[in-house]
Length: 318
Image (cartoon, rainbow, N blue to C red):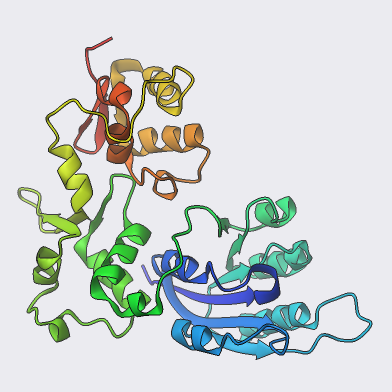
């Protein structure tokens, strides 16, 4: 399947730039970012030139029209989107704004067969805009703390960002997919320039991840070293866990999983149920990151459920 060709159009005066790096990480896992533009009256937006260059964003400058109730940059964003619709190879548009005024634009793009991803801040984004998109990303959900610009060039930091963006709900990713995500995040990334003959050697040298090759398999799987270590825990001490609260998320998740006959859930079913209980779009958007993280965070769950391959099985303990 051909990778998505993505254009990112940012309403800077609506969302700013601080959450954009995390957004780019998520979008890079979906496809290739070939257009990145931010629209604003940059004469009033302060000095953002270095940050824009660092992120590879093209600044589109438009003065605010005196006496007009509508921001000129919003109009120009919409015009650019229509021009790109007919003159570019984009098949996916990411409209980064919480403004409901972009609803007609989203409708036109989708009616033309394009995928539209919206992105904005929770509590501010228009419900109508959210429903009209194929997918909506909340910029303030699980956003990482601000990073020093030098971290963008650090291979270890880059690897951790790529893992966060590409891990499945089990906390794993195929090495080939991870490599593609790394290259999309930083086109200059080259494990050979770091002194490694293969990408696997680079991964094995990292303290942040662990690799494994299933018996009889050809793919190499990668997981965070912290997840690997948690699986090796044999003591009964809880991790960041106080006394069990019968009204807590873990109790509610247990009750939900326990409704499945036979006590065996597929990983996708278990993750979908967990997402609903936690109130997030997917487990990887939560602080737990994956199913193993859920079990590691709760003695209550860990005493009743265990990972079994790509499934979750209920223990005989009541």
